[in-house]
Image (cartoon, rainbow, N blue to C red):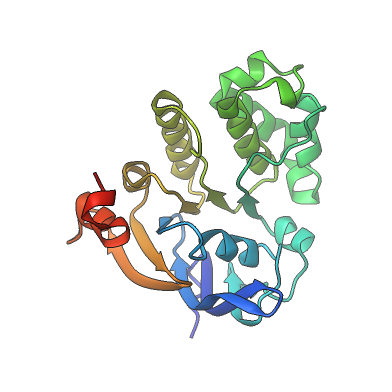
Length: 244
């Protein structure tokens, strides 16, 4: 039975590519205004889960409920219109467009258009580098700046919830710290968050709960400050030698 108070509920989700399932009946939930992490080895289903929730790929079985409404039968554009925003891996942006053009283009739904000016001001205040480089083409930006722009695009969609897939991938420690501050500020506005990360220190600094993903299933749920610490998690997934 779903809880209408939750922002997101995933129940028994099976999905993959062609007829091969990567997700093997995955279930989880994100409460209202909650920050939840997903951690586990590459290739075990974290990105597939986010792609399935946002309907980049269709589920083979299971249910996805967002803000009390079943969305697993909806096309991606209707999921975006409802405010469930997926910021994917790899900075998939238009390389020849300017920062301002990309941000303005992102506010394409009626909900986003209604708050376009306020959201744009918020994004440029949150990421001053984007404001300074607003007329630069995306392809001239650094990796960290492109990641800021990707999150800015998500914010321009007027999110009721954000899903971030490895936002710190390839970034320096300094940029990771800057990004962590920005994500915490976004979540502080009451926007629920589902965060996929391989940097265990980064994810533990941001989330209240974390799901450990193992071969397409949730193997464990951990609350911050709970019984499993950083080193135990690393050992669990990568072995004692790999955690060093």
